[in-house]
Image 1 (cartoon, rainbow, N blue to C red):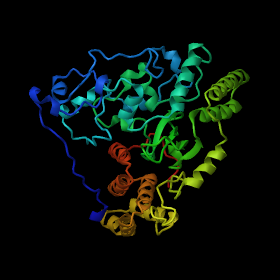
Image 2: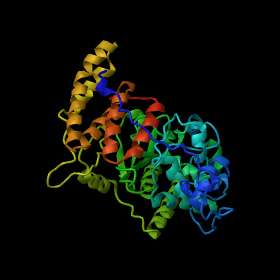
Image 3: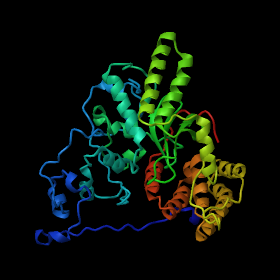
Image 4: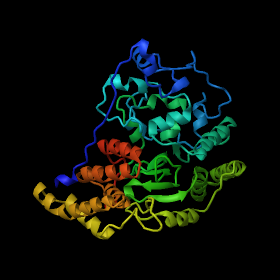
Length: 431
């Protein structure tokens, strides 16, 4: 492959200075402030903790604080059986993560440097953002509250519809043992399927033999999700928008499921569906038809990509600066990729890569003229097509695009994913 296809190298700065007690005013503030419960002497020596409480106080009225509950309380919308995914992803119970957006720490950090990340924020929202680099919307927490309310009433406690995973598992103390501990990027790859772009965060899974999963798709890491979508790994890369909230998605799942169950279970499902929709209505959550979500998305996206759910980047209305089309059709890009993947040797692969290298050059010209969307589109197309041979080019294209678009958290997720990318379902079709 041409050297231009190699990922760009970035310098990382870090401060290793040690501060003495007499110069404590020059120490950096601890990022967790009053909520930090770290007792590590190195941490206390390195960071200031003004107004630190001797014992962190957790207010009982905080509704989003993780609560003790029985296994049954998670089974409302969760499968009672193991998905097998957690067994693959889990490596211990510590659950710490050193990869954060504000630090940009890579996998080579020393244990000493990682010590400050061992103390997670007490607030569950902050904890989820620390681990997954994105914030969850209100409907995420409301669905969890709904599940708990149903189970506390022992209503349909053992109903198997779908399994809540990923960030949901940080809300559930019964899954403490399944948290990753050794690799700093484990949370970023938790429940991440083969084709998932960094923009997609899985929160539900169903049949893992097919790789069907549901999650939030967001155009920028600092924004709330644009929609909730689904993908079936065994069928390819396409991400299908379903709704703009999880209540609407679960309602859709229930509507489909009731068609294929016995009368008794159908009655249960219809009852659950009514409870779900009543809860949504009471909390001002709109359950919209799927076609409305698709229409809204099409108006916003500047390019379709192989994922078919599109990308959104800032484009100046007057100058049209921000995005330019790739000078090649999607069909031809797939043909180029196919030839590269099927190359019999390095020499043939390099020759077949010439056409792709030409597109990468066009992206560089586009970036010089502030049309950052082109590199984002091509990088995501290569990720969606699949193939380890494209990983260096993907890292280069998306690394630059995410930096220019100020979406650096996505690059951290991408690096973690490509370092541990594998198919979790048996593929039935190829691109």
